[in-house]
Image (cartoon, rainbow, N blue to C red; front, side, top):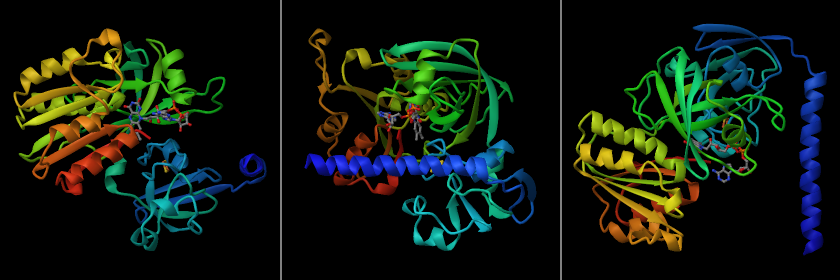
Length: 367
Ligand SMILES: Cc1cc2nc3c(=O)[nH]c(=O)nc-3n(C[C@H](O)[C@H](O)[C@H](O)COP(=O)(O)OP(=O)(O)OC[C@H]3O[C@@H](n4cnc5c(N)ncnc54)[C@H](O)[C@@H]3O)c2cc1C
Ligand code: FES
């Protein structure tokens, strides 16, 4: 058994080394010269240096394709049609494609390398996505491992987004992170505050972006973000809402609740917020203030491991256990879920078992 595990480890290490060597050889040896990219039947023509991935090449030209994984091939969001010059679809792309998309030549732009002239098609709305120069005007610890990052937009000075959407934050190169990387963060602040955005960021052990944000980012630092992205936003209906968050997954739900308060959307809604113990709860006063402005809103915090000193008398267990206990019939509801992917999978299963059709469950997995 041990020998088998060691063998597998050796094979995967060799494969990773080979992939690194190929990338390095590619960087040194390959010279694709200048390539032309024709977008939307010639509506836009770009001349670019070949060799880079299509996603990054377009970004360098100010064209931003949705991405939540920073180009690592794990979110499946960066789809564009590559009509000419893209070569065969790669095994890293097929898990994210259905048959129709493959037939329509849809590709993951973070996987396609620009080696020759390309003809591509992208939805018109992608041209509206912008890059923003911003400055950090506040850094506030919300819990021992969650920080609020408050940004003021400088150029352009205003952003228009739908509450619930996210931006990509550029982390510059630093020792341990050899090149700039992008990570997705949901906007927690109200959409009416066009000149500033607040992000709520959990520190991930050995995480490249979050280590930088939690230990190196300072007030006054210039940063770059691009967006907005995503289809996690409030749908217009009269249905009762169930909102479920774990940890920093509360961020986009706060923005949606601000929207409900500002636009006087008084639907019945219950916010379930799951964390480990009392010290992990945050935005409690803000939620209270929102509940006063949204009369139909109820709030249920759920602690999975309350500390003895918490003297907690509220809901306990996983947040999904509380949802299962509290909701009998979800058939007329609409659900908005955000946070840990495991929680979201469990919540979807519970809500569907309570009669909620899947097409009325909206979520963002922080993966
Ligand atoms: C649409 C979307 C919106 C998001 N919004 C937010 C947000 O508002 N706030 C927020 O804090 N995060 C959010 N995320 C997650 C965020 O984009 C990063 O993935 C996260 O901050 C980790 O980045 P990192 O560079 O520090 O870690 P990485 O260097 O990317 O990862 C380091 C290691 O940690 C693992 N890992 C990554 N993320 C987690 C995690 N959350 N828990 C445990 N292990 C992890 C990875 O698998 C890897 O092994 C969002 C993600 C998506 C897709
Ligand atoms: S950017 Fe995430 S899969 Fe391409």
